[in-house]
Image (tube, rainbow, N blue to C red; front, top):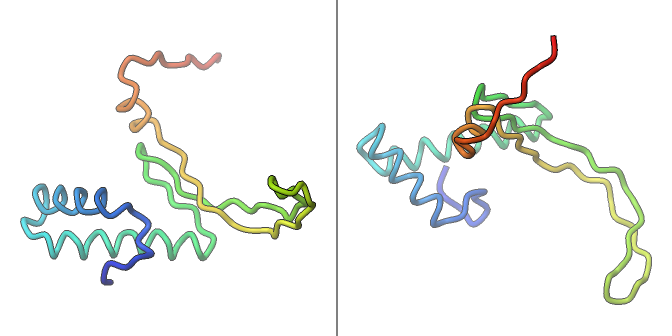
Length: 111
């Protein structure tokens, strides 16, 4: 899958990730680009089909539905109808939270 303007990763971050994958796994940036494209396409396809993707420790990708509602145009104050839609949601897993917050205290569960 060639890179497109609809790639969900910012171009500079995407290129950095491709370089990292090439350095750590493939040794080849073209293979790394292909791997990243396949993974991202797979995530998007699964979400589009309504599946939840859990990557243990990393996090969970899921789809949430937003109901149709009435909103306000901030410029004019006029009422507008906002259509129902779906949005992708990511919730960080424990390992990611721990990596981002190394000094955080763990909550103890009451037994």
